[in-house]
Image (cartoon, rainbow, N blue to C red; front, side, top):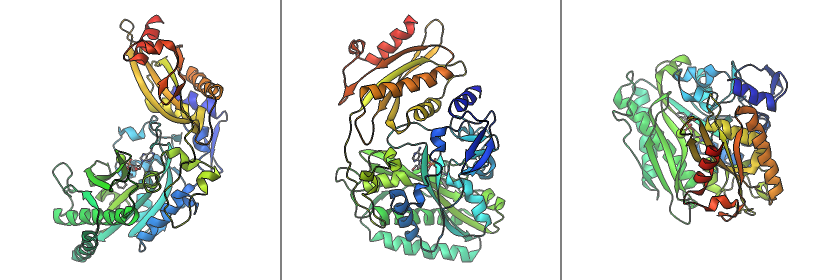
Length: 460
Ligand code: FA5
Ligand code: MG
């Protein structure tokens, strides 16, 4: 906790945090950084010519009878984000390593599900809600600390009229999908490990889970159908997998093959009855989903790097037109510049997300990815050190080695604030097409970085 306080103090010297014009007092839980705060006002989902805004409109058009909402403040209470959704008290999502807290009483929502109770409580029975969400996460081409989700939900009456509505809708959707040329790997709707809720009639719960799957398969067909951007001209491959969320049962995730790997695009399930009870919606049963809009847009437009969504470069922005999906033409791939940093972990340990957040705050979108390349425990002192490799690469120009060194120096200087012990060493590795040019030490062994890192740690 002291560490996080220190982190936020270095980035925000004042005693208050200002988010969208509102001031909040800082306290020991404050861990929001200025780099994150700078993103709160961007609202990419409300920009009609931005790929995230275009995708929002496309999905809203697919669900014409659903109420579309998109103007909810990202500042929520931990109760809205977690408690109302039955997150257990020890759920890792609540921790400072995973979420951005403004203070002990306010945080940036980590998912659009934070608005489920208030939206159901309005009496709306089918709705879509789009918003920016914030998470302390790893850094790579498909994870970003700010991204956009669209929550969708639909509830049915608990009585025979609800069952009839479900059966009719399921038949309509199934008939449409039967004609489609799309291969979707499915799993059972309800199983012992992914059970119906005790208060539900299992047959009714199955119909709801089936309706959820048919509804999302129909959306997937609508937005991806006929587009073979899933990777190197291959047909689109989609699969359903069993999942766990504290607020749904049964629960599922959907993955799409992209660039040779399965990319998770959404989570969903049958809404926990306690959520509907909290919203004071009686005699109802329903489903909800949360789509990752960046992930879907990356697949649709062939956008290779999630940082591009934040670009204000006209070469990016001018490629998109409302209502249209065209393959994105990358303007250039500038050279990567890898730099390693190794350090003894502070006594209270340091989560990888803490390190990634520190790197993102110091070097912004110049960081393409961060990888833990080695971990080392000193045989005598049992102290732990880690070696991370940071890839500095600008999306719109070539970074000079001096610029990358300056960014890396910023990272190291922030690190010195949080690591009580001295840094072991900082390795500067300049590469072109992944060939290590220097330092020479790294050429010595089969696992060169490990060796260099371990040796330096022992010499300390
Ligand atoms: C959720 O956030 C749940 N709220 C989804 C849900 C809603 C479940 C309603 C049940 C009912 P998850 O953490 O898996 O689930 O995130 C949902 C999607 O957001 C992921 O499938 C992925 O597409 C996207 N996503 C998650 N983390 C990131 C990230 N760091 N950067 C970009 N997209 C992300
Ligand atoms: Mg997930």
